[in-house]
Length: 316
Image (cartoon, rainbow, N blue to C red; front, side, top):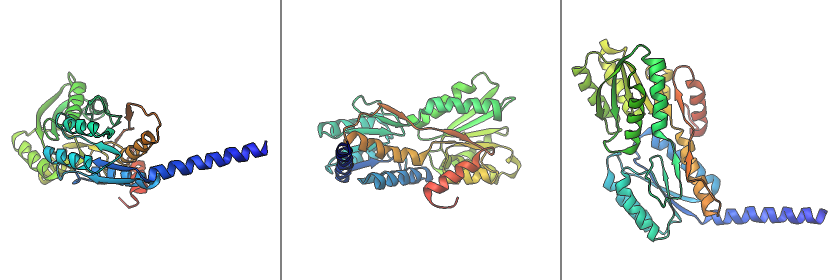
């Protein structure tokens, strides 16, 4: 019996060692939507942590802005030509990136999609949020906890045609419909703080009765908030973002930003690497892997700041 236990223990150790050796040789390419925001930097921290824990080589690339569709397409093609074991992409425009995915398929490279759904039939899995359903939850939060007696809503969104931002806008709109909430305008801020600030300044010149601004990412929310702050007579306007970035959490702590949706950026980045390695090691994984989310406001921000400080290893 003892010999059998020793034998099984040795086999178990050998399997672990063999799996680690296999993982050491994996080359994984991860293509972001952009590299210019707090959100993507946090995702990258998760990817880097996963690469270290699973002992794989990961290259992270991405365009400088979420409007650079062709730049991302070219980056995907470049990664396919690098003799990689797996391709992971957060697509800016699925209709465009899916063409590159077909090239990866021909090269025998498995494709993983994260952050934004591509609906490409041959992808291994999607890892991320169900943006529409979560936006419905946010719309309910707006109805029940923010504009409880109705009010006027402004939406500043990411680039037109970006499915992530389409889903976030549509989910909120569908939920607040019939709730005595008027949507004054929906304007693109292209996911950038400076652009959103200028957009919000122009909106405030036209609309004198804004109660709430919803921005489909935190960078735009912080830009819109800055525009509101410069108009000293309009400081009662509430601003809600989306992503749960460190800058947004700090703003909630300081009593400025009203709320944000936590997209669990670090965990998403980490899970991307974890599930790619599982698949390459021959394990079966689900076709859809959803990341947890939360709505963060003045009632619960402390625990999220504490969690993010731990994974980023810095003060917020």
